[in-house]
Length: 271
Image 1 (cartoon, rainbow, N blue to C red):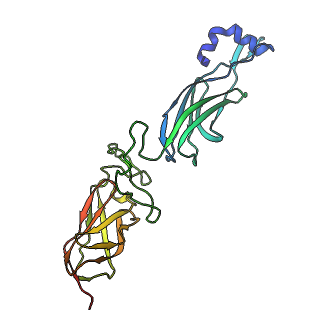
Image 2: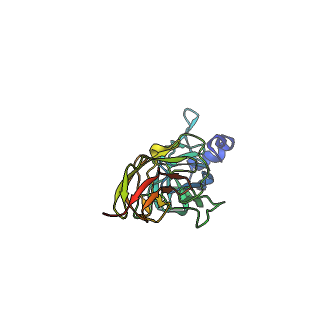
Image 3: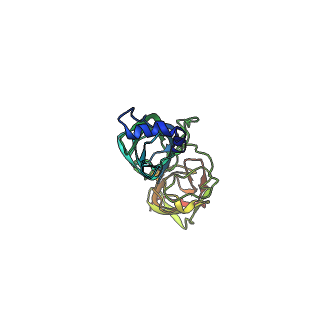
């Protein structure tokens, strides 16, 4: 029962406050929202709705009664969360602690008088872009950032961003990057000799792109086959092409299948 309802049972509550009678019941956690969040969401917040009954302080001389100030604390598993707002009438807002791994976590609410309650399976943390209802295929695309090429930017289908409020550290979603533009590759290049290439991400979140790209050629093979990580939407790398002499183009592909092709350039045999 929330505090607003305590007055309806004033005599019973006053008895609890003034005697050593029945203890107040533990709070009840009604809901935790949201129930699912990406792992390490920046400033991720949970809204905990609960019900609790409280004792009151009674001044018989003045014939008044007042509630004692109540506060509360929140844990996820064994890690305490920062409570940014606490309303004794039934709402607590807490920031999800950093470092919690993917999986299901229990939430514990403790009032300052020691009463507490635990809601098992209160929050599920999932890898960014995944949800419980629809998991991606294992071969859903190219990893944009493996262990040798920077952070993973997209190996999942997470939908298209529509809110326009993305921050630089947020995962890149489908539609955030619409293409890549090569700087012109000028002059002839030599077979199996390294040369530099530069690309620029295009799209609503181009400056936020820090992932990696698969690279191939229209003929022969390219080394390395993955370039990156890019930096603020600019991808610079050194590559070489092993193919017979003639004209060739480079092709890059990201984890969502967005591709770009360089200009035609000449590949020459070594002198």
